[in-house]
Length: 210
Ligand code: C5P
Image 1 (cartoon, rainbow, N blue to C red):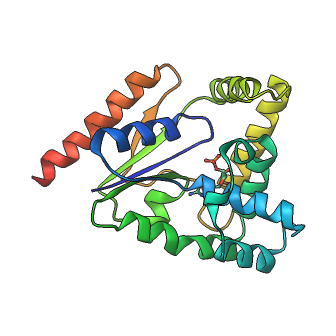
Image 2 (tube, rainbow, N blue to C red; image 1 turned 60 degrees about the vertical axis):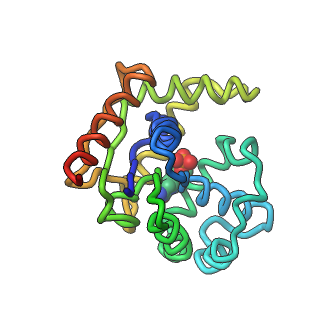
Image 3 (cartoon, helix red, strand yellow; image 1 turned 180 degrees about the vertical axis):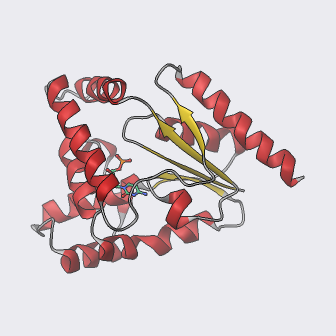
C-alpha cells in the first residue's frame, strides 16, 4: 500500500506520516528532507539558489543521510528548500529516488507537496493536510523557539506566507490537493485526533482492497 500525504507547512503532515508509518509498519520518506538537503548542500558548496543546472547536479548525487536534523530544520534551510524546489531540473533529479522508494515491495508512506499529484498519482491513499495560517505559524514558531531560534512570531508568519505562495504558484509540480485526496484540517484537532482520522481513511481503503 502506498500512502501519499501532502499539505502545507506546519500542518501536521509530517507527524501524521510518521505515526501512520509506525502503525502500519511501512517505511517512511519525508520528501521535504531531500529539498532541504539540496538547499543546505548548495549553501555549503557556494552554488547559487537559482543556478538550476548546478543545483540539479548537486541533487543528483545527494546523500541526505549526511545532514543532521538540526541543520535541515532551520528557517534558512526551509527557505532554501522552497527556492531550489521551484526549479524543474532539481525536481527531476529527485523524482526517481522518491518513486523507487514508493514502489518497494513493502509499500510506503511518503509526505511532501506533490506526492499525490506527481510522484505517486497511483497511490492507494491520498491525504491533504492543512490548517489555517495563524495556527501553522504559531506551531512553527514554537518549534523554532524550542530549537533556540529567537525569530518572532510575525516573522515566522511572514516567511510561511511567502513560502506557501512560492510552493503554490510555481510552474512545475505546484503544491495542490489531488482531486482524489481526502482533506484533514488540523486547525482544531489534537495530533492524536488528526492521526485517528487519517487511520480511518487508510482502514477504509484497506477494507475496499480486501
Ligand atoms: O515539508 P518541508 O517544509 O520540509 O519542505 C521544504 C520545502 O521543500 C517546501 O517548502 C517545498 O518547497 C519543497 N518540497 C516540494 N515537494 C515535496 C516536498 C517538499 O517542493 N514533495
